[in-house]
Length: 243
Ligand code: ADP
Ligand code: MG
Image (tube, rainbow, N blue to C red; front, side, top):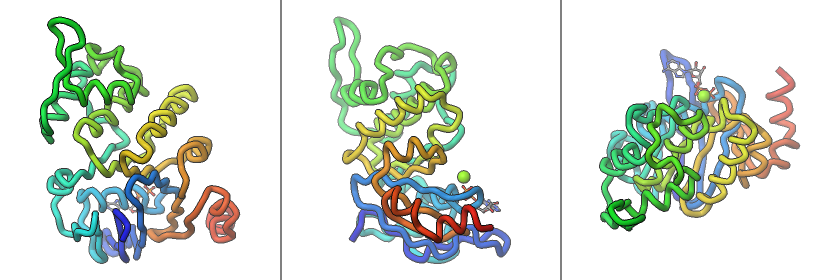
């Protein structure tokens, strides 16, 4: 049994099936990319996994447990973390304060370290700041961060909550080439330690980070495999070029 399984998942909005019998299995520690044209159902799939949207059919299993009807906050407690396209950081707080607030929502054991006399920092926050390369911005107010740094701070907020399954919708949207490159490095560091499902359009980025790709089309799985496999799949070519 895979870590996350979707079985025949369905949701309709006023009779329109945005997700229409979706099957998906993701192993623990995997980094899975979801691809598909606009309207294919990618964001809705993330909404269904995190519990923001209730399915009208099908099942969701996480670590062997049926969470199909579990409310969003309970899934968050089970380690499901969602990053949205518009970041939800507190602009008037510093990087450190944002991370402390995020951590206090899902507190683990407190273990502080001493940076230098007088300044203590939670060990996990210190680790996470290294992962997202924001250690130098500890006391910067979030309002003064660049677009890329704001996105990384939001990833860091999920990491300090020890989210085991992280869902991200177009994390590199609006980033410069340099920022996208750094995001790819950050994702490499998360590989194996967290399970990630990433919706992404930037194919260069997808090539760098993903082992397995799932292509959605009209709310279902159209194709799945390595980049090469899905790129050479006649069904994918037809869906993208044919219609
Ligand atoms: P993607 O992220 O792949 O571009 P979405 O999952 O956002 O696609 O949307 C899939 C389809 O479902 C689209 O046709 C969209 O208009 C529709 N849809 C998504 N959310 C809603 C909603 N809350 N109400 C009505 N229609 C919706
Ligand atoms: Mg979307």
